[in-house]
Image (cartoon, rainbow, N blue to C red):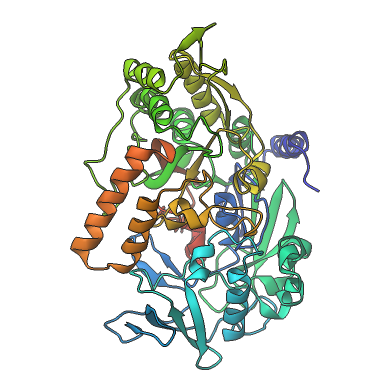
Length: 557
């Protein structure tokens, strides 16, 4: 059972009290306490996407591949990145009748689970079995769907046969290994695996983990304690213990930092840029501040089950009536630029010619008139049926920046006759149920994180709409369906030549900006606040957090 917000705040307040009473100093030591603003909704690496979980699990897990701080795809759990050039990837006609690609991976033979059990191809096969089952409800179902077969060569080598040619065949970031020796029995009833998984029932079992650390203790809604993994095969981490403490209230997390109750605030899931800048003005001499422009995309999902939002004119009107430049300049001092599509200008695939929606309330009103919302009464618009143009806007409770933006949106939309009711939820509920199961009625604000040059198939393809029948797999939470988008996404996976690829991605962004499956707000920057004695933290600017390289963190001499 998760403690309610009052309990979580009480824990944070008590910690602050004792820190102040004992005047705990912040100085180099063999333990590290990290403050974050959200707590994971679960600990299974395949189920539900949430930045807080991705950050926390990185201390105790390694991905097969990921993008590093230089935005290069690298092997982590494998020993060499497959390519056409090195012969580990081969395009060609396969026996099952499709143009596919066969990719050879070799697991690092040193890799073992935290209970000493070797990581082998048995775990690869089991993970594929879990991921491809439609009732499991994995977040990135697409990466498992496209695998037609896995051919085992030996205990550490396998060939992955993909059912179609795809340009990112070497990227296995979300093929996150599960321990077959622990989880096989829990998968006997796939539809119940989400709750039966050992990641939920025995989270501190060391056999679930294989990073520099293992999970030693979990207090739901409050904190996670990590201890060094005695079976870790890589570079020995400096810190004997790391505690990640969730403090959802901004005032409490900064007060704990000042008092020494926490050593640092994670940039990936900590203070927003405006909060960090204000904090730096007052306490800049006490900490190091690292700012990194990123691919984090703050936006509002439209729920296409809502008949009003199916009308593109209404969606466009909502965007025309928001002064996003003012939000960027006044709240973020320009550090977080306006988003004109889901692709950041930092990304090589960005299309600078996409349709742009400058602040234009007059145009918004005209579009709403055309859409049939032309009757004004008490400041709201009505259609011919007498229905009011009113929406429910949701986001994560306790996030002061998002809550402030909600108020700005509510005010600006009111000026064009659109009513907004604000309803927020704790992050664990919001991401664990409301977003994942498409339970928001109209509008849902949150952020997407992406890897460089990633293809948003899981978020935009109609086959990726979560539902009860597919175990809530996929991340097309708006329920957006457009045959043109499906076709472009399918083609972009196969056409790897740069001219064709660039053309497809350009068209994809143009279609996104025209149809607006979501309302783009801005691209976020991460703000890392760390003690002056800590080194080794290098912000990445993409979805793979600094915690993936925790073994490189240390204390300055």
